[in-house]
Image (cartoon, rainbow, N blue to C red; front, side, top):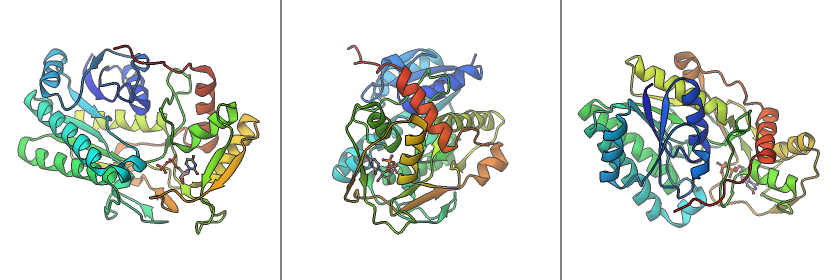
Length: 331
Ligand code: UDP
């Protein structure tokens, strides 16, 4: 069984990816400092607790498991925090990725899959974004991810590192078997907050602005189901195993839903009222972000299977209602 090093394997997307790797016959080795992830979410392979900036610890883990590839999910990823504290994002995301890439090359592990983001595009309202759309990030989260994309290119040229880069945003849903879920503390994302309101854990959802130039005045976003997203990562791994490399793929559904539409759909699916309050716009929000995936469809054979709004909300609701919060990580 091939070992695959999964940074951030204790987090939302990483834990789902570990399940997909296990099902595809790989052994996922989670490398995570548990700063935002949960030890209890690591169920499909071993957990190596460590920080990405700790080169000695990374060398130890690479030597122990001799992974065939790296899947790099771990990063600081809150746009609001990145706007307020850019130094933290530049320092942490860049240093972590640089240390990881150098450790991988030192260990002769040349296959690398990187979770990038559509935040690298910045504010390009309403355009169907694709791999060759101009990248003009508007905050340190997007800028740091874009710099890591460049880093992978440069290390590829110098040392033969082969990378698959996925750009996406608005990942939603949960494992349809409710074995993994989304546990952010604090939670800032739309669908999980809606479900907290549906369950009664929060009293109301604040809609961040209803004066956008969209049909109902609320922002439009492109959502992709986490199961579809991790399927793409397995296809990316096969792509690298087949000797191909250095390719960027966008993973979107190509159509958007407004905040109001998501709330309405959640009301119907959960059969709960979900009270809302209208608040001011949130700094840094674009009116409409929609992403295509034509290249992933043609070259990887990726077809999203669960990315309908119904399935994303109902899978998230099932996981939310049946999974226990994974409690604090033991020291
Ligand atoms: N949103 C909202 N209220 C919330 C959280 C999010 O109105 O409590 C809106 C947000 O302004 C954006 C959309 O929902 O238009 C998706 O936001 P989220 O933070 O989930 O993802 P992002 O688009 O920032 O990646």
